[in-house]
Length: 361
Image (cartoon, rainbow, N blue to C red; front, side, top):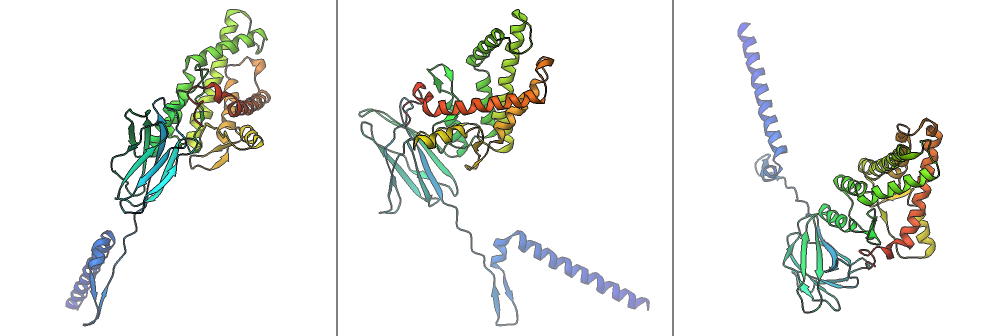
């Protein structure tokens, strides 16, 4: 009886070892699918079953960019030719009103060349470009007048495109003085990363003109005895502090914090074309509808939330007579109305007075 039990235990142990070996082989097949493709499973002699898995096709690449002159002004209407590695497969597009062009569905690993030509400018041919699967190669061509050299800068990601676009936006000033950073004249502007949203907000709130604007508004509020601060230098200082803090909180919350959390773009997207009615509707809808980082229109929770949050925070430093929920919502409504007016001014007036943006259409 004792020997029988040992035999059963040995048999059970061998069964466990066999199952462990089979489990190990199964895991190896899962972890290394390339190996699994090469294993032939033999059934009865003469019958052979092989397993193969087709590799997925690589995602196509894209090449696009913007044509600029040496003054960073757009060059619309430029002819852009994509020279393909296969004869007869060349493609040609015309740069749009924003000087932008794009070639999609390109074969990864193949070599392409871009040639850009425009009246009055030197034509140039890019070096050989190779697109990786799913990648976007971006070209910024700065063309010079005929007889001079041209240059081209190559970027390989949407983030780098956004960085370059923000650099252009940070040069936008009305009359060359007043910041006009939160408007983009590119309909297809690359989405901002969270880092760029905070960079743009800090660049705006620390601009000297913003401090001067807060000082001017404090003087107006002092003259109109707005807010229950006292008169005199102390009251003026309090009004200046309140005005600048309101502006700082609104820009940081509505222009950086909430847009980063909600993946929304805080900028005004200039339309510039279409009927007057469509442009008016586009402008006055700005406080309520924004473009998401995914490129789709969505409710502008960032703007509305920023106005409400700024009003709530102001209860900390406003005089007691100027606090309360009613004043928070009243302030939010005033801010919303101001954004609607600002949208109309942006759409129909400010571009012509912004030198760096004036010729980008």
